[in-house]
Amino acid sequence: MQTSVAKLSSRDSLPLADNRIRGVVIAAAQAIAERFGVQILKLQATDNSIEVELGASKLAAIGFAAELRRVTNRWAETKNLPHFWPDPPPEDPPGDFPFDGSYDGWLKPSD
Image (cartoon, rainbow, N blue to C red; front, side):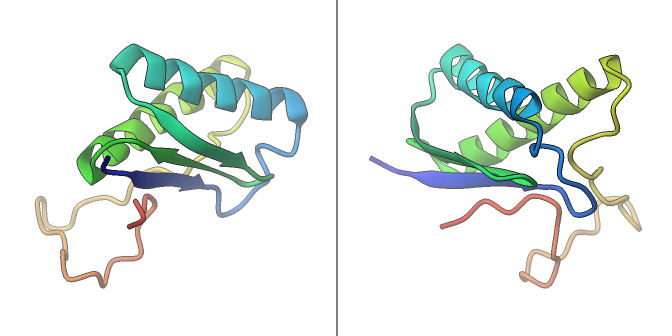
């Protein structure tokens, strides 16, 4: 079975320090996995991050993390909280992304 790890980290805050918020983010991760038929092999949450090992490809892990980011940031907005996860960097120029590993981005699927 192919496995991949997706991790979301907050750079400026500790959004998951509150156990209620941490529970919401974990529940969202579990719901996304169930909805898309992806198996969660391991899930770890700290005060500023969530890391999920999936029984899926790297591409699926990227999509999973993007959906988790979108859903939980939207939930935070409805509760008048700041976004948990940073916004992706703007493209400059559009479509110019260094795939040589030099970009220290907001989403890093692990090997």
